[in-house]
Image (cartoon, rainbow, N blue to C red; front, side, top):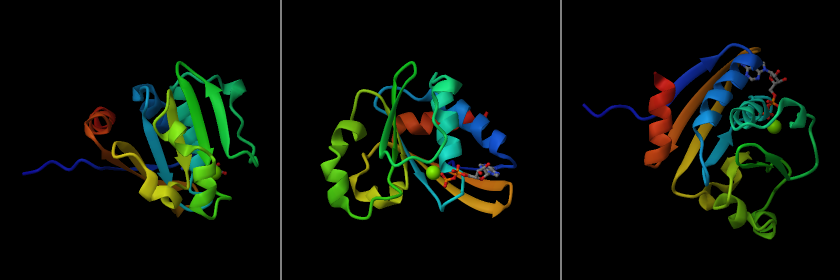
Length: 158
Ligand SMILES: Nc1ncnc2c1ncn2[C@@H]1O[C@H](COP(=O)(O)OP(=O)(O)O)[C@@H](O)[C@H]1O
Ligand SMILES: [Mg+2]
């Protein structure tokens, strides 16, 4: 029987989502792209915060407040690019951003509202779907594309 590659998890608080992000973040490496998909309030920014922490970004350096900047860059053990496409409504703006530099860049890229750029995502990508189940419960589904991301999911499973 073919083993299921995706991983379906549930978190019961923002802290649990941050912890999950940290665990994943620790396993990310240069060039990895994490695509976060889910409605407003589903926990994308919260998970991104955990990912950044797992990548060695200091808590005090991380900006949680909503911001109008499309791309934030952090210094962890690798450069971390956090892209929030919330305000983007056409691909032109993404092209103008010089997205390739980030999607195939010298760091780790985390993209919120990644469904807006589905066609532009690299073939190897960690897709993470977030869904609101209840006030504090979130479904977090990891869909790894490519060997390395599949390896990460295997390690998160144990
Ligand atoms: N299990 C959970 N995981 C993530 N966030 C949660 C959870 N439970 C409650 N929350 C709250 O939901 C909100 C998620 O916001 P945010 O991460 O900014 O979402 P998004 O970036 O998807 O719009 C935060 O206020 C957070 O405290
Ligand atoms: Mg957000």
